Amino acid sequence: QVRLVESGGGLVQPGGSLRLSCAASGRSLRFNAVSWYRQARGKERELVATITSVTTGERTTMHTDSVKGRFTISRDNDKNTVYLQMNSLKPEDTAVYYCNIVGTSLWGAGTQVTVSS
Image (cartoon, rainbow, N blue to C red; front, side, top):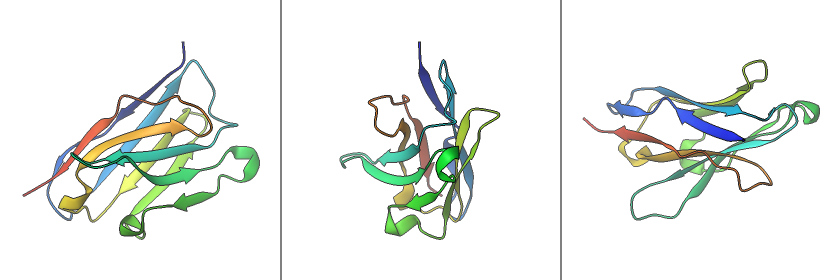
């Protein structure tokens, strides 16, 4: 039974920060690339960031222009967890955030991020 669980979301004021976690159980992520996606209400799910496996150098990519310079993706292989550090949050970042093992249909259930004053 493989499961991904996102956590760390919540309500934050504009300009604030959150760190999201994607924890895997039942499967090692060491040799997998992992992506973060987000989906705002009424919008399509969009690819935000990707980090590659340990054997490919844990390279990172920010796919969404609006988050470049504000978000950082990282991983802790000992904890089998991938993170998304989100700084200088804007109301436009409000969405449900999901993680996904690249090349698979394995998703977490998502964590809600709401940026509002």
